[in-house]
Each structure stands twice: as C-alpha cells, then as structure tokens.
Amino acid sequence: MDKLKVLGVSAGVLAVTYCYLKYKSSRGETPGACVEQAAASNSKPNKSSQTVTRTDEEQEQEQEEEEEEEPFVIDPALMASAQVQGASSTNTSTKRLFFVRHGQSQYNELYEKNWKDPMLFDADLTTKGESQAREAGEVLRSMGANIELCITSPLTRAIRTCVLAMPPTQHDHIPYVVWPESRETLEASCDIGSSVTELSKKYPALSFEQCPEIWWHLPDDLKGNDDPLASREYFSSNGYCEEQSHVEERIQVMLNRIWERPEKSVAVFCHADFINETLARFFNQPDKWLANGEVVEVALAKLHDSTHGDYSHHRPSIMQ
Image 1 (spheres, helix red, strand yellow):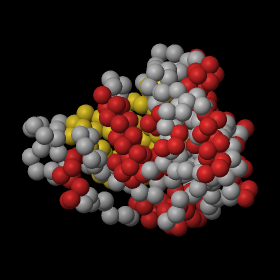
Image 2 (cartoon, rainbow, N blue to C red; image 1 turned 45 degrees about the vertical axis):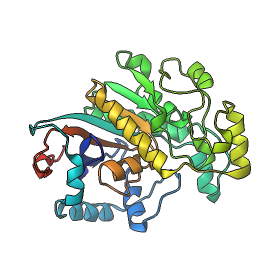
Image 3 (cartoon, rainbow, N blue to C red; image 1 turned 60 degrees about the horizontal axis):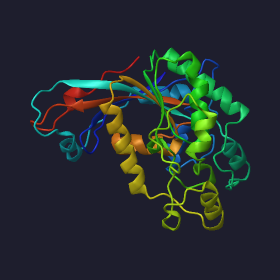
Image 4 (cartoon, helix red, strand yellow; image 1 turned 45 degrees about the horizontal axis):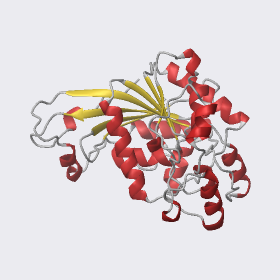
C-alpha cells in the first residue's frame, strides 16, 4: 500500500487533514498508477480511463522514494485560513470521507481511440466499468469504511458506479443522495446529463431532493431552459465550459453540507476533475488524478483553535 502523509487546510470554516491512500484491487491491478504519470507530465489526463502499466521494479522504487520523503510542511500563509473565530479549545472531530471515481464510461473508451470528443452525452459505463465499480465496493469493504451515507453525482456513470459498488437493496439502512455539487467540471459532451424526471424513474432508490430538473452548468444563452436537448444541441454547435470559480464554490458547498450532517463515514461517487480539484483546493494536494474505479480516503475535520494558527500538532498518523 502506497501512503503519503500531509496536512492541508481549506478556506472558510472547514479545515481538513489528509491521508492519501492508493488501494490495489484484489485482482492485482494498480488503478492508481496513472497518478504518478499525470504529476510528472504536469498535464491533465483528459477524461481517459487513465490506466498505466508499470513494472514491479518501478513500483518498488517509487515506494522506497515515498518512504524517504521529508514530511510535508504547510505554507504559513495558509495556516491562518484554518482559524475558527470564537473557538478556544484544540479538540477536533473528524469524518471519514471516501472519494470514488466512476468506472470506465463509454465516453472514456471512445475518447481513447482518437482523443476527440465523441459527442456522447451522459455516457453509461462499459462492461469493464461495471466490473471496476463492483471492485470499488470490495475496496471500500476491505478498508472497513462502514459507509453511513452515499453521495453520488447526477451523471449516469457516477450513479451506476454507486449502485454497483454499494447496491441499495443490500444497504437499505443508509441514505443515498444525489447532489449536483459533486458533478464533473463541464468541458465535454459526457458532462451534460439527463433530467431529474428521467433519472428518478431509473433510480427510485436514490433521493433527488437536492437536484433541480436541469442541474448541470448552463451558458447564459440557456439560463432557465429546462430542455436537456437544448443543452446538447448548443454544446454540439458552440461548445462551452464551466468556470473554475463555479467548481470551487460547489465543492465548498458540498464539504460544508457533509460536515453539517450526522454521518461520520461518507462515500462520494464522482469524477476525476472534481476529485483532483477538491484535493488540490481543499487538501493542498495537486495533481492527484484517479483512475477509473479508484478510491481515496481523506479525513474531514473542523479545528477548534483560534490562538495562533499553527496546526502542526494536528498532523494525522499514517492510516493502515
């Protein structure tokens, strides 16, 4: 198991501590292999399935290098943002937060053939993606996750990963909620989804209470238009992307909402760009690109200390 121990903080009321773990599946695959390649190239892997094969010797060398790394030291300029006004104690309470990237989608498969957008809206999983989703469920169980709340993006590839990894019929004691804040950054056809009317009929076990009928990002020309076909036609003709500021805002909304809920162990089924942005923006961990079906765990904590902003004493121990 590869392990990286760091300390990070968020902007706003939440401060976060982070333990990044890459879990190998029981079948011997290494879904996290692409992380190192993406970081080395300093470029985004472009919605591919992001699977890279490495030799045993390369993996052993990387593990040795990680073990020799110096502890991460947080930038003092960031420490102050973790202060909570009016708090006086140094106690923390934490939640276990598991990010799961969806399994391989039909878009991923087609995109990798010629690296062009195939104009496949709200793509479903491939057969391989379905297997990866089930394996993600096995990984969660092997981690002792004891999930108390399942959150999923409204995009079909994430919903299907969620229900395959943790079938609602086998976990009818926990809530399954669809939060639009966890959707992918819109930049490709696969990021334009289906209406809540359509989705709620297909997935009656999930709660869509937080979702408007059209929940993905819309350009100004389509504001107020509740016809999914209008978004697809507009994108096909003009193309458009979601602004970075919008993504950061909805990540903050999602983390705050998770914190306000009572559940202590939460799974979020979502997307590569979204997870990368979350880890970079709120956990001080840039260039963490997950492969399809990969799982990472973080600890979400609210720090109660406004004395000096030095939170090095909250550094977490390595999670086994």
